[in-house]
Length: 160
Image (cartoon, rainbow, N blue to C red; front, side):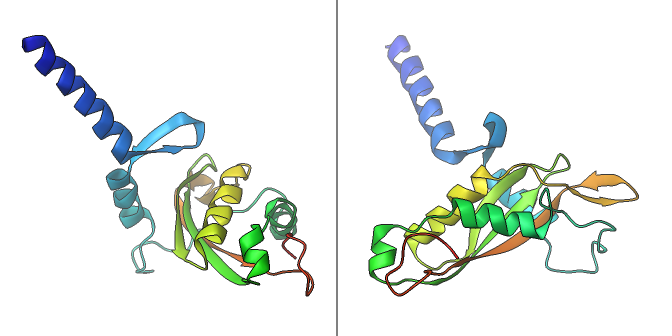
């Protein structure tokens, strides 16, 4: 009986940890509670708490390289092409001191398939240049609008 209780406890602990953990880049595990706490500390809506950094986070190569990356990686699902779903998904994430993207989430949804596609492409991104003050990098919350627009009346599955 004691072995059975011990085995059940191990199984329960395994299931509990897997259910409440999400994988973040580089196999780092962070629970949803930890992620929410990090957002509350990092992504404050009150601008008087943190001043604007000297250097904002930046995609490697700049804004043009970011648009090129998005355009070459985003794909429409067949359902969204057929239903001519266009618009903007806004993703929110934290850029760490190392420039890694963590705690990705949808801030403004468009369609479940396009929301998933925005997150998928976000997870493909290379590291960013982190925000910094006086040359010291720090975590910063970032919101990125991703536009989904069909190229022509027939739609070919690529973002413009």
